[in-house]
Amino acid sequence: MAEAKERNLTPSIPSDMQAVLKRCENLEKEVRSLKLNLSFMNRKDSEQTKQIEDLQKQNEELTDEKERLLEEIERILSNTGKM
Image (tube, rainbow, N blue to C red; front, top):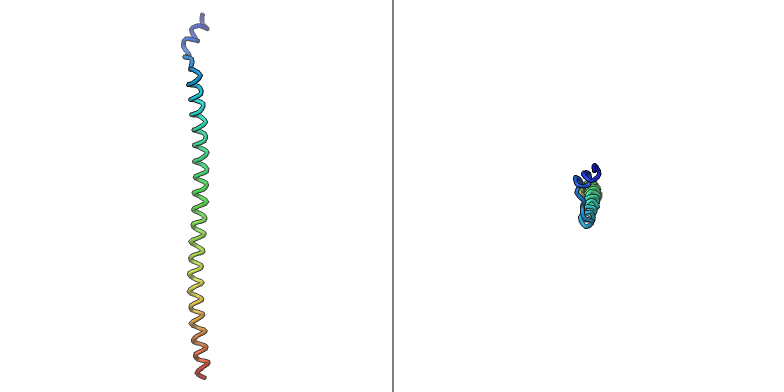
């Protein structure tokens, strides 16, 4: 008799509902995994963006230095030509 009462207290879930619940659990796991992957990719993207910015800054500095050296060469050549 106690067994019968226990069966009545725990409602049975139809198999299609169990399948839906299982699918929801799997989708939740997949969403968590995708969120972790997205977070990782965003971090990598951020690091690469910082590297690109650093390289652009270095390139600008080297371009400025090149222009300064070319001006210095022109000045030296013009002074040498005057002698």
